[in-house]
Structure formats: C-alpha cells, structure tokens
Length: 442
Image (cartoon, rainbow, N blue to C red; front, side, top):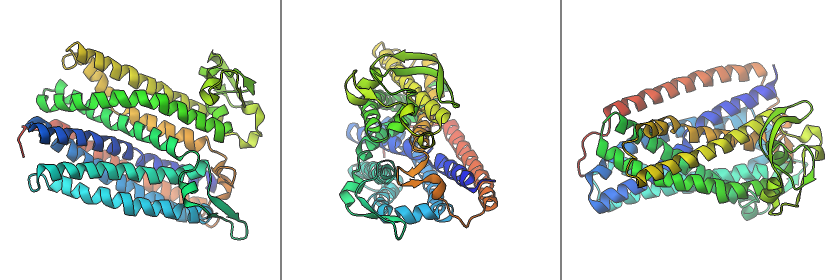
C-alpha cells in the first residue's frame, strides 16, 4: 500500500464530505436574509414562516459543516506533518482570523437567530441572520485566502535550514494573485448552491401541496438570486478566473482546456475524449481562437500547451479535464434552467408547470456537485505540487505514519460519514414531509 496515495484519498474524502455543506449554508444564509427582511418589513406571515422553515434547515447544515470540518485540521498534523511544518508560519494568521473574526461572529448570532424569534425585536432578529450571513461570507474569505496561497504563493521567504516558508508580508500572502478571483467565484457558486436547494425544496412543497403560500414566496425569492448568480458565475467570474489560471498556472490551464500544442489563436475545446498516454484528445469539437481571447483578451495571443511543460509537472489528465468540463456544462444548465423559470414567471405559469417544478427538484443537488468538481479541478490541477512550485505532494506527507494506519482511519471515517449523511437525509426527509406548517406572525 502507498502511504502517499492513501493520505491523499483520506484528505479527498474528508474535505469532499465537508465541502457538501459550506456552499449551501453560505447561499442559504443570504436567502434567509431576504426572506426574513420581507417578513419583517411587509408583516407577511408567509415570509416569516418561510424563514422559520429554512432557518431550521440552515441549522442542520451548519452543524454538519462544523463537525466535518474539524477532522481536516487533525489530518494536517497526522498525515501531512511535513506540509504543516512548511506552511505553518503562513497559514496561522488567516486561519486564526477565520476563527476569531468570522466563525465566532457566525456561530454566536446563529444562536440569537434560532432562539430569539419572538423574544427579541423583529429588527434585531433580522440583523442576527444578516450577521450570520456576513460571518459565513467572511469565513469563506480566510479559507480561500489560505488555499489560494498554495496555488499562487506570495509574501514569503524560504528558510531552507528549517524547511519551511516564512511570512514576510501578511497583505501579499492574503491577497496573493488568485485570492480575490477565486473568492468571488466561490461565493457565487455558493449563492447558486443555496438558492437551488431552496428552489428545489419549494418546488417539492408545491408539487405535494404543502405550505403552498410559503413555498411560493420561497421560490420567488430564490429564483432571481439563482438566475443572477448563474449568469455572474459564467461571466465575468468564470472568465476572470480562467485568465488568472492562464497567467499563474499555465500547466493547469493546458490540461483542463485540453490544449496539446502551444499555439496562437488557441481554440476552446468544447468536447473531446481524453487519452492519457500520450496526452491526446479524440473527437474534438473546437471553437477557434476563443481560448486565446479568454486567457489573454487577444485572439492572436499564444497559449502554452501541454508540450511546453515536463511530463512530471503536468496534472492528471482525465480527472482535471473531465471535472472542469463537467462543471462548465452544469453551469450552462443552471443558466438555462433559471432563464426558463424567469420566462415561465413572466408568462404567469411558474407555479403551475409541473415538469419545470420537477426539474427544480432534481436539479437541487447539482450546484453542490459542480462545487465538488470545481474543487477537484483546482486541487488536482495543481498536482504534483501541494504548494505550487515549492513543495511536491509526495514530499509533504508524514514519514512516520504507516499505510495500514491511514487505511484503517479511512474505513472509520467513511463509516462515520455514511451514518452522518444518512441521518441528514432522514432529518431532511422528515422536515419535508412535515412541511412549513401554518403561517403565523411572530
């Protein structure tokens, strides 16, 4: 058994399970801000009940996100001791800021939001969910900043004697070349994830004729946010992110875009079948010059292909290419689906077109899947580096942890996560069967 591979598998499983929940909770928090504001300002009991119903769902998702996130921190010290020593001086500050400035804000005011309904003024109650949403959004910034430093290191110096990177500029490390563009892209993806979950649940309630007025208001709140988020996720966010990758991680761009040869007027590969050995693509469908324009704003610009880099510095072909293109395909589907919803709303048929409501139900988990694919593209696309051009993944593991111990922990984590996810689905199903109940002012 390969200890490096097992350590990577374990980390992928734990972070993949954890990353199911933060995108939903961030997007859902902002939907709750709108629902609670309208319930307060319009004195509409249906909006109030929608906030109460989806607030309970938010609490469940938040709890699972916190519980699953703790495991990742322990892995840094167990399976990735060399990595922890190398990045510890850099990561300490943003992770501490996330805990003190963001997580405490989010968790403290979540308690006020969940238990203060009817006990504090409507204004203060709305303010509490606004601060929860701001805390979740701020928390994402510090996590993205730390992760982005691995992608595009800045504000550091290497201490070869101690075998670590040392912080020289907090500002440069936090606002490294990829932080802001990745942060905006992640926030928009989270908004789409949360709004699709709300829209899917509201559509399900409408189809089952449970809490119709509450579901109507939830759907009409979530759908415009989902439509706007889906459009912005493609442009300008997706475009700017691709341009950033082209400038700072050209190997990743070449593989995820399937560009075999360095060329001017580089085509955008809309579809292809990849073959890993040698790197090659069959059945190509290309759009001439579009990749050059997307990467550098010039159709004549040269884009480096896979031939420009050593083979041992190229990320895995199939996983990087497939995850990226599937993610883009899902993003296009979100635009079509929300655009169709806007059209049906305009025609007055949004609530009565049952095939569309079923489509929303089925599409509810797809943005979360797209987030997972985006994470795979970003992290697998950085390989073979755990810190780009500074520390290889194979050199970052703990040398004293045997493969058998890692395998045992993988089995344990998978068992626990399956039980947690089963409990989550059970509670979610029971909540949907019960419905939002009767609307009452509070």
